[in-house]
Length: 171
Image: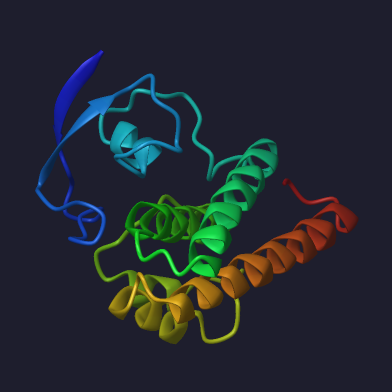
């Protein structure tokens, strides 16, 4: 079922949503536009559980999709193909999902930089690096930076998961 949804203020960012409303198929996967489908569903209370409540089952899917998308980007940049908008937009959206979800929160793009500063599981200088990426999102340097952030976030998440398991905390 497809319906037109208003993008909530806390989720709106012109890089991801050119307009304030989007057509949403609530049977779509997280790999399809519009991004942040779980956050859009949250406003309607349509799901019993969300990925930020229990991320571990989603990690293989997220990482697999990142690898797939990263491979496409790598090939395009190697061929000097400048048509990387969709792949970079997807990579950045997925990084925001991984960053927020691995900290137990839904993605919030309004004032994201202030919110990210308060997160515990994150790479060093992540705010400055994401600002750089968002300022030049389709450049090779932005691609390299998002690649590094993905690797570092995965390491930080795995480290945190291991520590919590060893302490017997809820995962």
